[in-house]
Image 1 (cartoon, rainbow, N blue to C red):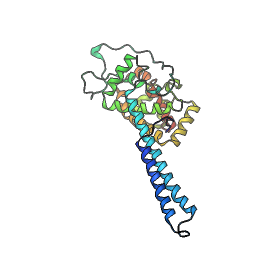
Image 2: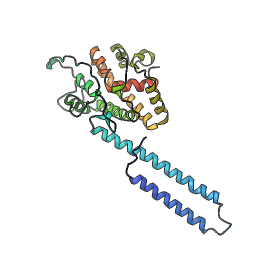
Image 3: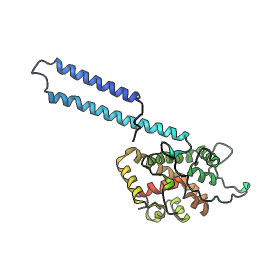
Image 4: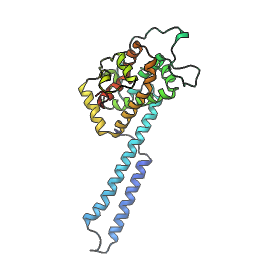
Length: 274
């Protein structure tokens, strides 16, 4: 995982430095205390010194990456403009024109396990999956708060936040990602459990440059790979109930959200539609 060059030293780095210094001091003292001609040679001593130090550095680096990822995820849960963290402002996504809402007494309620009296509607679900455009986006913020109050929807929202931020490190933004809209029938087949070529129309992202970037990241970065697979599993579990309840128009609108585009991109990169 990429780290900021000005990231302050923490307990992990300090502990690693102390451990390395102690090992260096103990080994040097032991080598100097040996009678002349009876201690290990210089090459063996260098080997005994370098190998443990390299292991300590590797361990510190891994723990630092995990710590930074957790810290970033925590910041993301509190941020509204998720995919623009630590990146220049990007143009806001073009949302599909909102469909006329049915009368209040006919408004479809999607989630059933929201503890608050106000429940998550299909329209709120779709808007939340696109994330707020800015801190002034009252509609997006309200929908996101409702979505985070629902246990299952909150999981996919947070998983999407993680992958969108990791993708932004490589300059990949969903607002810039061209994709072919998937027909509602493809989404319904996916919601019914079909996978592979029968839902290939969901893999509407065909930008070879972006796919190569994501494919390389999947191969080289375990943290990114784990986050991507976690997101795909969470998306799979979350959208099935939504797909059954949504109209064709709502499914087409849903397919243009940032979360859906991330699914299309990562699903194509991981062979979900092969």
